[in-house]
Amino acid sequence: MAGSPAPTATAAVPVRQVSFTDINGDFGQQQIQDEAALGILDSTSGAFKPNAPITRAQFVRWLVKANNIYFKDAVSKQIRLARTGPALFVDVPVKNPDFQYIQGLANAGYVIGIDKTHFAPNRPLTREELLVIKAPVDEGGNIKAESGMKMYLENFSDADKINPQYMSAIHEDESVRTTRNIARIWGTLKALSPKKPVTRSEAAIAIWEINDGSAAVALGRSVPPPPK
Image 1 (tube, rainbow, N blue to C red):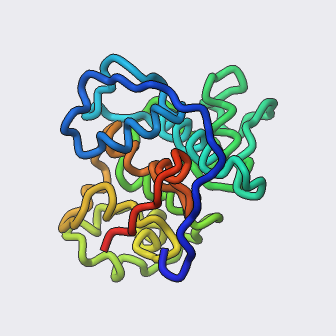
Image 2: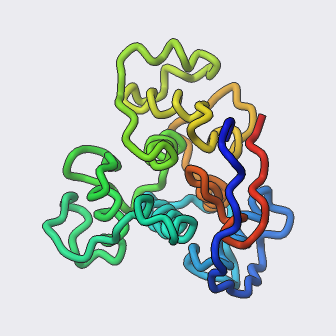
């Protein structure tokens, strides 16, 4: 990010062997391999299914795991996993295997539900939902929803289809204080297609960088330059 020193490699972390059978040539191949090697993803071999949609629960699980690996030596940036209730979301009870990640992210103060008491864990994640969940984590705090933001998103031909409550976070995604998810995942867009489901490959690209941490740095490589 502009004005910030390049992050240095973190201490060594356990690295796994990766042998997915269906990611060769995929745009997110490097990101998928890196995250699997770090133990962020759910497996390291077989079919990854890069073009399949990812659920909201799966994305938050990957996001929290990635964040805590990238910032394992930065206590203030860790997202504590939830171990006990009460559950904030009625559809993510304590017995849900992803409760620890979803509740943990909510406990950290992030607004991630589809409303105050529902998370919809099994629903496919949409593009606008990815941005409204991840951009605040990049920023280190919630991005306040403000009215009148549509004028700042007129570069998208379908700006009127974006949830007004999500517009502030989507606008902020282009800030130098975030990892510019739109540019990294989808490149230059004339239409955001905000309700389009996010693929597993796109989700992997999104979480490859979080705030000023990345899978590359966690693996001892130099951080790549931000997209222009």
